[in-house]
Length: 291
Image (cartoon, rainbow, N blue to C red):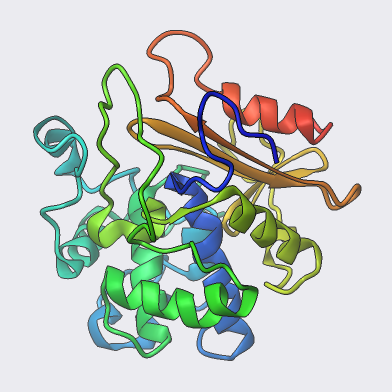
């Protein structure tokens, strides 16, 4: 590992949307245990999920093909009024109600790709229920810890940082970490470079399953992507995901062909002007698998 710019090698970072591969790993573990199916609607789990539209399956939610919008509708306002914590006023019931309200009717041939924090957050709440936990961010974390974090030995991965976080920095983001509240499964985890590298290796060894191999070239994918798998994107031979918080950026990727795993943890917000995809582009170049 190489640390630059005064960032400690063992620094704890906001993982932002690199949380989503962890959520997919939890789904994979629960599928292997027979607690849910990738293509079975979350509504089939009953309880507080019973009224969810049947288009909301773990697979569709984890690949952003469930027909949900990027965020709950209220986020159009709270992005400005609660910049660092736009989901903070929502309960788990609010999140599920938003999914019910804004889910689109079934569409022949399925929905195109549409990146959705709402979808990932709903999936995490559903996974908490499938694992026998409360339908909440806390329940999601307990399930993730039992099925993914502890088995892989990732002690610093948590929704509450285990020690001081590398201070975010950005012209607009300030020095606050980003809150994900009950949508924690979309971006709420913290962790270190070492934990991310270990997590990536666990995919190459199939310790977390092989869900990441199920890449589909669905309609609507951006030019950089060649496929979407549960929790991951494919670009040529590379499998990866990135994340943008208010004042930090993250990326994790690996190459099944070479066995290389790369993570980038960057202190600084995405630029207002210029190339916003600079971090994933660098990641893909390091993996020698540009899209």
